[in-house]
Amino acid sequence: MKIRRAFYVITTLALITFTVVFSLRGEKKSERPKYMLVIHGGAGAIDANMPEEMKNRYYSSLGKALEIGEKILKSGGKSLDAVEAVVNFLEDDSLFNAGRGAVLNSEGYAQLDASIMDGKTLNAGAVAAVEHIKNPISAARVIMEKTNHVMITGAGAEKVAELNGLTLVDRAYFITSERTKSWNKANSKGTVGCVALDMEGNLAAATSTGGMTNKLVGRIGDSPIIGAGNYANNKTLAISATGKGEKFIKHNVAFRISALMEYKDMTLEEACNEVMFKHLEPNDGGVVAIDKNGNFALVFNTESMFRGVTGEGLTPEVKIWKTK
Image (cartoon, rainbow, N blue to C red):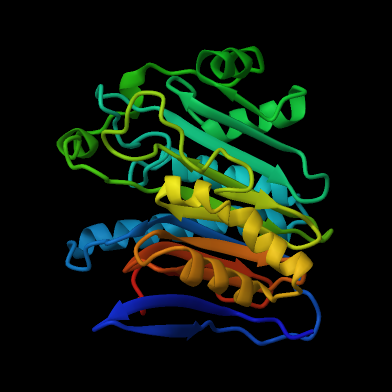
């Protein structure tokens, strides 16, 4: 089976739509790679003129995230452990809109959402509108593994997290000077996510976010909603989304892509393109995904997306804009 290894992006210019394919280095193999990992750090109109120092910080952070995940997978670790560890790292990095450095709501504090899913069992866990959990993705995993529920919100989720030994912090922990300055910049958004395939052939997906700047208190986006912003199924794929949450919820994006693969026999590339370019509109967002055979896709209809990929036989690579 041919392993597809490419970046996919579409943009609109002078009312003409183009699909641009970016090939990655690495020898193509006829069999499934032993492991694969793909990440994103949000999609949108990312300033290409940002200072070189800031660009390098983003590249360095994305590269480190890939290293963390690959180390786990390369040593035979589970895909669930890899995606949690990667998202933990991105939550702790204030560059991204998840965990510390998350955007602020209309009242000036962060409310965080996250979800994780096991493609082998279809078990999933999610937290939403939490204010004190240092690493929401770990709380989502606790919900999945330690309770009979899929999603718990607010104070209830925080109580479960505390009872299971997770770190709770004051609201001030999440607030950075950069986010305070951008508080009144409407519609600022972003997400972090990771999908992985391990040596046992199991898929997993994890997504975490602070949502959008100035959102109403209690607003919940697509990231913690299984099938909208996050999904994993060993029959098809693992996928994590980023963008306009309300759109991804309405179109049930993550599960829709999986369903096109399962019921219409589309390839990963075909299914992602079908949904991102025919059901959604330009600038709605992007997805990263890996299928059961190790093919991967990084698809976005925005100007740019923080993203990266690594795996057996691949040189780790990170990008922000269409070609760099």
